[in-house]
Structure formats: structure tokens, C-alpha cells
Length: 300
Image 1 (cartoon, rainbow, N blue to C red):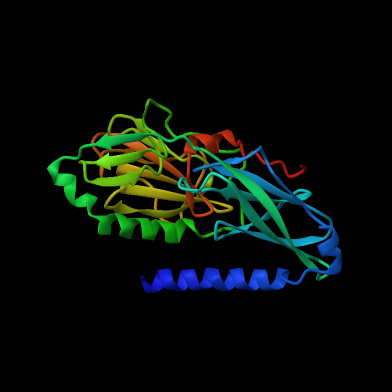
Image 2: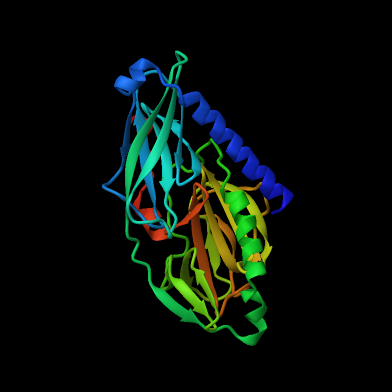
């Protein structure tokens, strides 16, 4: 484990311990009846998808939650606190506990357990044959290194919400690869597809799905020439296999801005755009994410 990953993991554990310790001794009032209410939008959360959780109550100062061992931050939005919850593709289909820790302005705190039903994602399987020149990119160490690098980035939460009108699919086109598909490469290596692939000629302008700040703009072994945008609230969008990057880290972009040109770099067998979305450190289905809308109303 790298020193950076170790430090990030240690920090997360310390934060979780601090929050659990604060909420671990609720008042008698909290034990008898929670002061806040927790609600999941929809009946369930599917494997590999994101959902909206809201907490309402009087005098709330801060809300955080633990789900599948991950720490989630809630953000004030009008009269409620909102978090974007996510489930990994491999999440077991059953009811899972969401441990919500609420801190109040009067100094009280409470922990509320809310069960989240997990439903099937129904993702496909497929095969991919790479040319000999790309076979080194099937090395597990290469894949693990890139996965770790990305996990360290998309697991960070930015308190501000940069998007204002929801998200749009960049460069809609013919879909040639779906999220969540388990692919067998050259009859030797299994890998779960982390994004949505759309076919497009090399050199096609690629646009940002929403407002945000460029957090990464560089060449990666698997994703090729790549741009990653931080949209705030733990939401990131990535654009892979580009032939050219037109933005730099730290640059602010708006929805529809051109951030690069499509290509065939990295582990790719033809010109296309691989678009991926991470929520709370988890890669989720971009199509399902768009269906959430996320045009949050401050008055709601």
C-alpha cells in the first residue's frame, strides 16, 4: 500500500471513529424517538447506481452517514440535508443499513439506522480481443495501479455543489459499450466496465456534462488521454481515450464546454468516448445517473 493511500485510509478511519463516537451515546430523547427523519428517493437502490437520501429535522447542524463502510457527507439544500448515496456493482442484493449520524445546534446528537433495499443491476457479460500491442495493458498490476489512483481521487468530497441545472450526456451517440458489463479480455482477464462507451469519429469535440473544476488531465495506461471533472458533493465525471486534452487541472468549466477531442488512446480497440461517473467514491451507471435529474431546488 502506498504512503498516500495509507494516509487517506487512516484519515477516513479517524473521521468515522470520531463521528461514531460523537453519535454513539444518543440522548434519552433520541433513543425514544428520532428528532430527524431519513428518506431514500425511490423504493430501492440498484447495484452500480446512485440515489438521493434526504434528512429533515429542526436545528440540524451536520449530517453524515456510513454505508458499506464508506463515509457520506450530507449537504444543506433548502429545508433539508441531501446526500448522494451509491452502491457498487458487486453489492449484495439485500437490505443494507445506512447509519445516519445527526448533530444538532443545541449540542445533542443521534444515530438513526435506515435500511436501504439493494436491487439487481442486471449487467451483461461480453468478450473483448485486444491486439498484441495492447496485451501489456492486461497486466493486473497496471490495472490495480490505475484503479488505486482513481479511487484516491474520486473518494474525496467537495462541500460546494458546482452544477446548477443537472447533468447531460456528453456527445450523445450510438452506444457501443454499457456500464457494468463484465468483460473477458483475450480469454484471460476479467474486468468490469466502469463507464458508457459511445462511438464517434476521432477528433470529435467532447463536452463537459455539467459545471465543475478539472481535477485531472493527463495520460493514463488504461483510460488513455483522460480528463476528470469534480462537480462537487462527491460527484465526478471522466472522459477517456481522448486524442487531445483542451483543459488543465484547476480550470473551471461549464456544461457544454469542449474539454478535449475523442480518440483511440489507452486500452481501446477503436475511436469512441468512454464516459464515466463516480458518486461517493463508487463508479455508477451514467445513464441511470442522468435519470436522477439532480436539478435540486433550494426551496424544497
